Length: 579
Image (cartoon, rainbow, N blue to C red; front, top):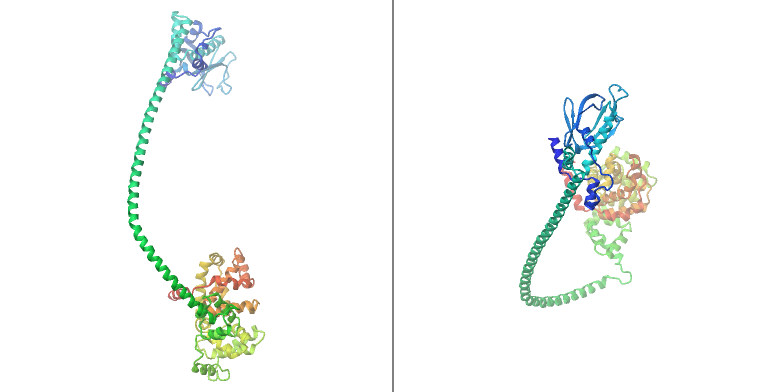
């Protein structure tokens, strides 16, 4: 089947030889004018007669075989134990000698003459002892290959061979035959071109008609859409004309309402101006400090926060009052009403240092611990600080002394300089909204709650800082425990921070209460975040202990204000979790 397919392909293929190119351009120049190529009868006999040749395989093995062409020169037969056929159209050329890569199984004598036949599929190696026979066979085979290309395939070659064998026609008749064949092929090609042109024209006409039909349909659809839009717009216009009258009436009513509102606004503005005149000072543009110092005594910390948020003037006045540290006592005690006579008697009797402490005594271990902490950690006012702590523990049975309280007592005594006032302020700080009693009592329940609240807010506001501490396995209680227990007075005594910074933190603490401690911690972490990231455990702890940028704490502090309601929700969840 493979041989038949190749034969059919060789009979039907279009020639690609130089002669075919000449035919396409100018067929008159195809025929040679000097010596025509011909195949003599001797060459024909050399090709058609069987010859005994030795065939070589690639490994050099030899087999004797008979090689010959049929009478029409259509194929070459190689007879051996298994006969094979080589089509003439598959033969490309023949050369003298063996291939350089051919390896012989045994050495050949010197009188062996080889030649090669190149086909489209493979190369055949042959040899013979007759040198003349080899040369004639190779020459005839090359001439046959050229004639096969010149005479357009096997059919012309067949007729050519028949004419030579039977001596019926010469080369001129064969050339005339081929010339007529080429002319017929030209006619066929021209007819095909005309048919293709006609087909293209017909297709163009059909395409143009289809395009016209599609365009007309599109235009009709567009016209229908436009008609619908015209109808809709006309309907809308009629609806709008109907609504126009109603809108005009509404506009008239609204104009009347606007006029009445403007009149009301003018009246209210006049009333506001009248109300502002008695209390407003045009020169200083700030309310009188004497009035607010007397009012702040009766306001709670929450009311003061609301007052600062009202206007800029209120905030300036409140800040000026808070700069006076003697107001701290009033601010801490503002939840009570000092105008009542019973309260005055109670405070005078209860906080009098000469009367209090007569019926109660402090445990000796607690007294010794207070004495050691005060005299070991402070440089001045040691006796007064120790006395304040002893009296505070006497009248608060649930309160137990813990390290850090002596810093707070010494700090407040440095401001007031009076034991009774310091006791009153510290007694007020033990209760809400400051919760220092829960912070200092046994078990440190408030401290654990504060660390829980701070950890939750830090993951939201400072996620990279929280991840850094988690990666280094640093617990918050290692860092913030001295901050909470000393209400940041630890910075003044241990880190030697400026007293001004600690005073500003306490201003914020007395106004906000417990949420101020969380806000200050978040602010410090925010300011040190760029310093500790990508640092080791020891470097991080060293920065948080000794390299706090204290100058920027109070500037950034308002950005980290904490909502008290959020802290209350976190406290509830902390209680329910059983922590």
